[in-house]
Image (tube, rainbow, N blue to C red; front, side, top):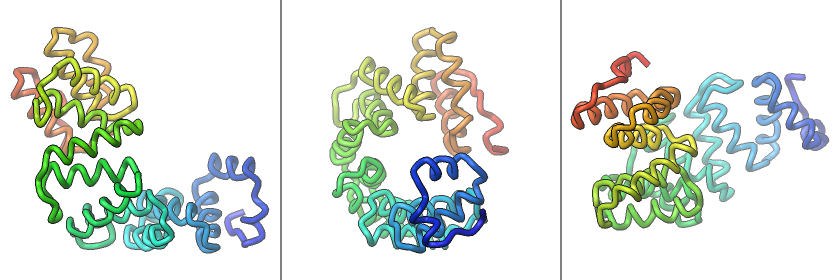
Length: 243
């Protein structure tokens, strides 16, 4: 079935929904769209992400943003954060860091780890009308890390490694990178691998460094190569531009 009625959505059991998720993406997208049209806020947020990713539907960032906004106005926290992401990256709307910062702060203030992480970036970089404040950024990263947010755990590692705001602590940095890497964060994998290289543990570093390109952005791969060069190691992600 590729079309669903309100009755179909209402009658869907959890087991059937699990099967739909595991089946053809277009069929699942049709069910999610029907549920979103009925006003199910979670479905609105999910459908927005499907439109943004082009998962089961044609990619349409502008339409994705409209669904994120509908869910956000119903207080869906991840949708609030995703509205910010759309404005930050120009997905379906002109880039606007000021508007992005507003939505990130809203999500952060309501307790969403991703909102804390993204608003912390604004403080760290002094963007979107947010004053540059490393202490405020670190506090947000730490709060998100305490909720288990792996990217924020990795950011704590950067602060401990550099000695920014906190006293420099290489061992604490290493532990943060390890936790982030084990949680699947490509930045954590890279920095853990980099520190292992610095400790003459190339054999331990290799599996982590090899996994980085699986999920990393081209921009990060270029940054990673530059960092390896600066620390006296051979760059390894030279095909970043082609990814």
